[in-house]
Each structure stands twice: as C-alpha cells, then as structure tokens.
Length: 183
Image 1 (tube, helix red, strand yellow):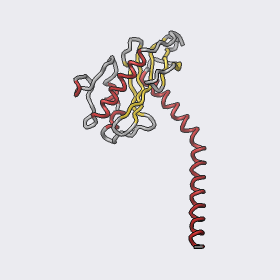
Image 2 (cartoon, rainbow, N blue to C red; image 1 turned 90 degrees about the vertical axis):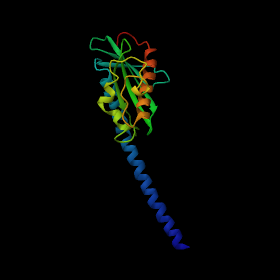
Image 3 (cartoon, rainbow, N blue to C red; image 1 turned 180 degrees about the vertical axis):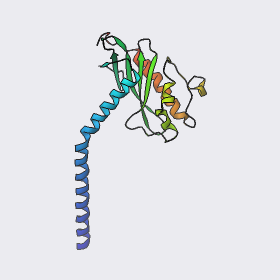
Image 4 (cartoon, rainbow, N blue to C red; image 1 turned 180 degrees about the horizontal axis):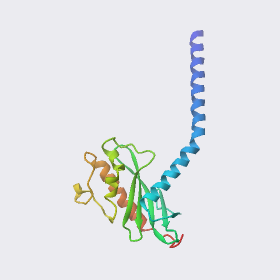
C-alpha cells in the first residue's frame, strides 16, 4: 500500500511540474502568437487589396470575422476587405477577400491559423494558381464542375466548393457595407 502511495505522489508531482511548464510556456508565447496573427491578417489584407495603403476597421456583418475599408495614399477609398471562416473538408478555412469599389474581386487569401486541409489535396487551395482565378470576377461565382468558371482542385471538390461559397458570401456581405469615402 505504501508503494502505491509513493508512486501516486511521484506521478502527481511529475504531472504538476509538466502542467506548470506548459502553463508557463503558454503564458510566455501567447502574446507573440497573437502579434503574429495580427501581422498575418494585415498581410492578407494588403495582398488582396494591393492598391490600399491604409485600412480602417468597419463594423463587420455577422457573416464576416472582420471587415476593413482600404484607402490609397491620398485617402481615397479604393475598396474593402473582409475575412470569412468556412468549413472545408479538414476543418476551418479562413478566407480574406478584397473588393474594389465596383464589387470586383481584387484578390483572395486562403489559410488561417487553424487551416488543416489534406496536404497535397485541399491544402492546394493556398496556392496562387487557385486564388488568382477569382481576381477580376464578380459574385456569384461557381466552380466549373457546377457550371461556373473556377477550376476545382483535383480530388478536393469539397474544399473548392467551400472556398467558392465563402467568397460569394463575403462579396455579398461586403457589398452591403458603406464605408466612409475618406480615411
């Protein structure tokens, strides 16, 4: 009986030290992780709305995670961006969409911190060739398999459809926003 108690105490002590180490690591790295997520979101906005120099946050409709108005160096409104989260085959996909003032797509960025689509299949949604297909298009958009103009990723139709549906939803939500005309 005494051996069991000693083993239990040793196991408890080991678990307590490991838990303390994990908690301390989380505490130390959480700020840096949050900072990197903010930088990644800013980079995605700049990538999908390249003519914008400054961004002003807008009140995002409930479909969107966030929304921003983009302004050029002179303060003129050049478009809007919005981030939407959708369910793909492997989990959540975060998509940032850029629109010019005529609601034409200027770019999309696919990814997010919890992106977990299948490597070599759905993960190809992050590749430039896939995202570039959306540039210059207006909603509604569909993949070719569904009678549209976007090439689906081979063997990743669920991901392709999810991204396309989310882009359409983001364009619709952004189209309803009226940002101030000057930043």
